[in-house]
Image (cartoon, rainbow over all chains, first blue to last red; front, side):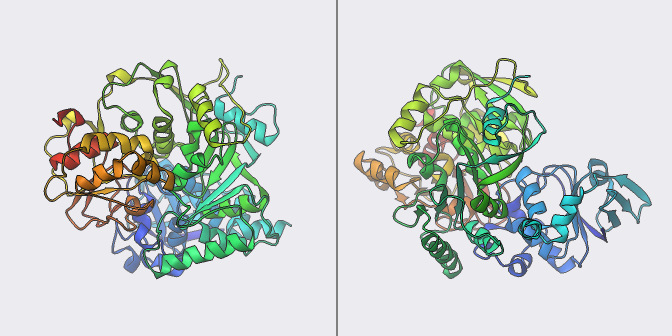
Length: 162
Length: 420
């Protein structure tokens, strides 16, 4: 599994309220949620994002509310992977459970800049910044996590096992 | 090697003699919780399951508290979806308008969770029940759905930070000041992935309501859970509210902690978190002249009866400052009734406040007190992120009910000690 796209870059402590504000939580439709993704931190994001793009942020990404609507909105907006120094723990579980790939890699998260072209190999965990010509070693996705992502989430994965 | 309180509860529920930090385990669940925002997503996921029956209809709680009484058609559709699901599946603990309260104020009051149990909830403040000596943690809707069907969840066993609480509370100090002080000290990711264990001789000087507030905000330091040992006060509370059998766990003497801190309650000052992170704390003598437009007293953090009592004590016979809107929201119907019986509702209304039905409402910018651009609220809630309570250019200052009530009277962030 591989991902390649343009980077959208954010800082520390990006909370789930700015990823998808509560005023939109009266919907649980991924397409509806994606229309307002990142609205309170980056109103231009939805206009800029293209299918396959990559989100990069610093510490504690996805902190705050447990709303699964946050990784759902990011995934439905077209983002193929989120790289961060660290993730808040509920967001981490939610992202895996809905099949949004995420990688913790502090060095990559600090050095990669907005607009860079980045390629990720999920089998090896290798992150390549094509624009800068640099590469980083993130954690490889264990096979079961790749299976969850391929199955589009935990429930389908559990069903496929039974 | 010894185990922490959290590790002991997880080991027991995983059927293991012992566990160590970092170990992946599957644990049995005593309670699975969802609300009107997160349950519809879980119900949608449940429909994809081959096996659809819940593991135990008595061990699931569905609480309609976020956008209720419904603020618009879409949120009404969400509640309708959950109501229908609860009916079809004979879910025992479905709490609709009239019975519901704010979930984390309601469940302990209903005796649905006691010491030694495990609980996951699709709401980040599920960590509140650590006040009772339970392991409880927030998850998303998919984990909730899987838990409802299997009665189990996987966890990475957390390491822990120990907070040794000593001394007696200084005047006007409450659980809110304790936890805001701690978050200011360690930061919003200071306990990331870990447990916060609160121990020490000072615990006896914290009321149950103080402990609920402290455990409630463990998530604001990034923690997996916050937990207190069980003492006489906890046992008294559980006996009053529950018929369930409980188990007391204490950390082993040789349990390992990543870090240890001592918190002296007698040295704390009323503490306020400035926008836009709970870690941006200042003590009340450092806040300066911050004029406010609105005060919110309530939420799963501070909507309990002792919160209402201290706020009413400060507002009694006084009136909110000109131009300040004061919104008081009891956490549960029981708290609401108690307020009526004790005359607190009258005090608030005479002071120019509105008193609402229980709801999460303004805490997450849902309804009942959403802010316009440029406005400021002093709130007893738990988050002051950008746009949390309304417009991206509005500001939330987190504080205790005592500071919120004092600020309502003066129209700027104020110390309760200065209300003459």
